[in-house]
Image 1: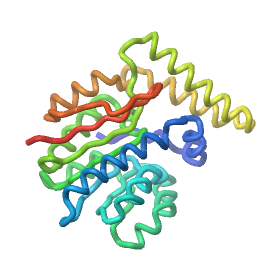
Image 2: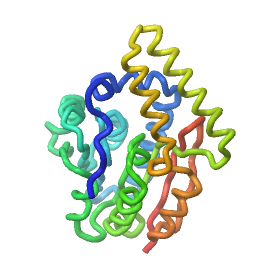
Image 3: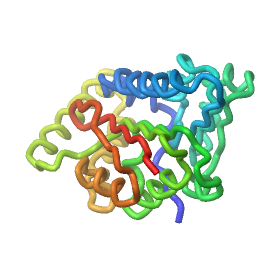
Image 4: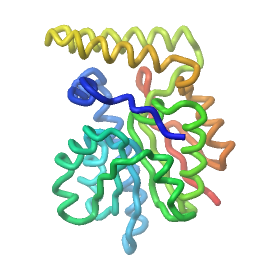
Length: 242
């Protein structure tokens, strides 16, 4: 089982425009970085092994590395265009020898890792792209490979349980895309992102907040909390207790 590739072509080439259409993007990835910093502060005398699931251009990874430059970070992505851009964007940290960008399927990579070998997993706007069974298997492998006390952080699309609220927030997000892309006359990108967001609502993909937290608890995560929510997205944190 492998994850679907959903970021080829125009979407991959113009991904930074998505960030412009998501005003709280930087706030959320900063929250991930600050949580990583808190974790590292308590463990100053050992290497911290970290995996970024679906690094994309490497935006979130760079936020984390700027404030925790001594991490041992592996950034995964299954899209070649994305890994090429991430290698360029993270070249300073790659040159320092503490960051590696890997073109791979995330679940395949995680299954090869030893038990209790990773300190932190983080991800941003990626896990909602996984189909339900694949997502559950990712949670299982993260739990298996995280050390006791290990940390999982995710800034992502978590659908509201209330469909009226969810539809209202979807309309808001689509309106932001129209605002950004229409002003640039980039109707091709606009179409791609609107289709992408509508497809995210399908039963095989939709990641509802409550259901996702229940899935995580079923595989062993016992401490799961929402740190922030704005519109369609949340920051979710879990500390593994084994």
